[in-house]
Length: 359
Image 1 (cartoon, rainbow, N blue to C red):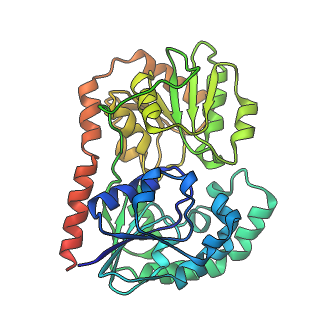
Image 2: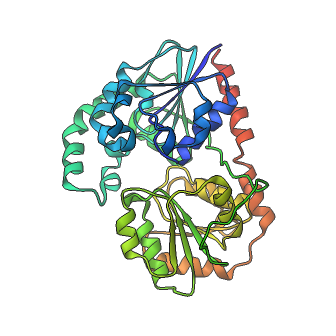
């Protein structure tokens, strides 16, 4: 039985791209189909994969900045022909629209934010982006609904996403949590210029990730150091908000990321996240999290046992939660046990079982 993997685009370093790599390790002979692939901008492991791209690949500007391709992604996936008995689509808006010769499974990271959560998605974006989204919303909504109905089986990365799938499409999805990729036993290297004691934020720098609220909270706590790992279009603005105790690391190799997780005091996460990945990566190293009480974090964080929640992404609430977490004693075994429930082995075993059920 032939397996293919379909993903929106391979142009960045993110949790969804790590999930695609986990899928490929579960099905190492699977070809990967995607709209755009930029080897220098994503994980190097993709270089070993058989990757088929869309016609958009010939435009270097789209590979460097996939958001510029927004008006063309739905047509690109509508024209994409995936030849396989089963296609597993890793989708947050586009891959589920590909045309498959066999059966189609979708692992949904979220129904498209620009259609179903436009205020969150467009927060902080310019007038041009808002006008483009508004003008395309109606045809894209029709396209998205048709694409969803072409799917044989829907999987959701969290209970929050499962509920969104039901609301958007009227489809009952099974929850299959994304795996974390943390490797506490791997080689670690200390990044230059990082203080001995620090708190950590790992996030793409986009407005809806609410990193600005975290930075503003730490600007009122100058005795605490904050390391922000990530890059994105909001980077310049966030740096202008930061105080002297905040350090930015745009993109780091895994060996440095594992060092940061292993040596931080705690992780802070304030984003509107579909699946709460970074608290699990921190927990794998025995570190607690301070996280927004929203979305995927409700699945990945156990309040009082592996982390502390705050209710809104507000600097004052974040500061109070960070203070509470700093005063609490955490059980490293409980933290690591929580991370183990979301291991890649557990993910691959369930995904293989689902594929076999569809033979």
